[in-house]
View (spheres, rainbow, N blue to C red):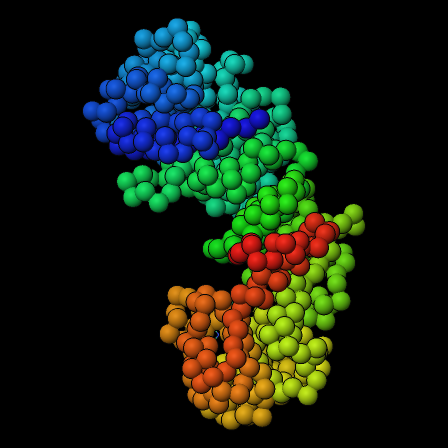
Length: 502
Ligand code: NAP
């Protein structure tokens, strides 16, 4: 069973201890990163395991290995020796592990560690990629069979991460710590148990004086409580959210919260990927059961589907894939979420007789236009780039125009419902208003698909004139609930409707 390890990177032992106390209930092991301590503090590191009251790793990481120790190598070896010296009969008062880099060849250190039951972690770091022969590299790291081999590597692509999972399968027989650093490697930290990694390193966030030990580390509480690290086992169903860049993996939080509340043996991991092809190769490698596909892959994924819903076929975009025996089946829950939200908001059964303006012609506008057409509405599509508005409008015989005074004039006949689907006014540029030429009368029903901020400038203007308005949050929630249904093959529990937020 993989353990959660908290890296302690404060400047003093007292501060490290304070942080450990605060997070004790989420962790199994602590790593004292003595290289981060003030030089005077390092002389007292021997006392730390007794104070910590849980197994502690002693690490003095050099700058060349991503640490802060820039002193003489002889002095570092002396410090390591001090950490292992004066061993007590009660092993809990000694360091439980010591991290020795692969090139460190000091037999007396190894002897001291072995004599008093301190386990040696033989570590290797690669900040420039993943060695193609990483499985062999892991095997060769251990000088004696009782050492734990550790490889921490920095993938450049998701295919690099795939190599790490392959290496994990090939080295099932050896005790190891295996992880990828950076955002691409977050999944290896969450799935450490599946990889057979002895532990997963974490760092605390939000404390100004405490640096994150290594890029991509999660907070121990997040790893333990949100991702339910300790419950992940070979049978756990793994889902993912992908896109690029994946700045806010909001839906992974939503799914993990629901899986936990419903006691479902599943986890959702954030997996940023520049291309959909490498994401799908990675998904196959780790036995992914499904994924939420976000920008920019919603169209690029289409050629790789073996089956798709009717919505995917008429919209030409897919935001949800589920693994089936024959391959990936695609769904479009953006469209489903949008039309459900719109019909409830307007209290209509369909859009017959309604004249609608769609502002924008990006990815989400495609779903909006298709649903407006399916629900029998008539519409005009206005967009900054007119040719894109035309592309969306023509298949449905909608009108189209530019986002200018002429376009605004044309939309005057389509103002029963106005649907704003551009990114103008979205955080952080909240001053933007794509409809600044248009004066609301108060009779329009106004939908802004942006949900951050809660009220865009445009929505505030509509509201001030007395329009009934809604933002995109309701659609966002509904599309996620449909994704849950496709992932788990079960309706989203109604009891959770107002309890789980995104
Ligand atoms: P997208 O494919 O990148 O499309 C962006 C749209 O915004 C295009 O129509 C683009 O016009 C327009 N635009 C961007 N900057 C502009 C500017 N300065 N002036 C005028 N128009 C501008 O993005 P998307 O995926 O369709 O998403 C659009 C918005 O919908 C985002 O704010 C997103 O958060 C929101 N959304 C909400 C949900 C939900 O569930 N509520 C789901 C998906 C998206 P051009 O074609 O001229 O570039």
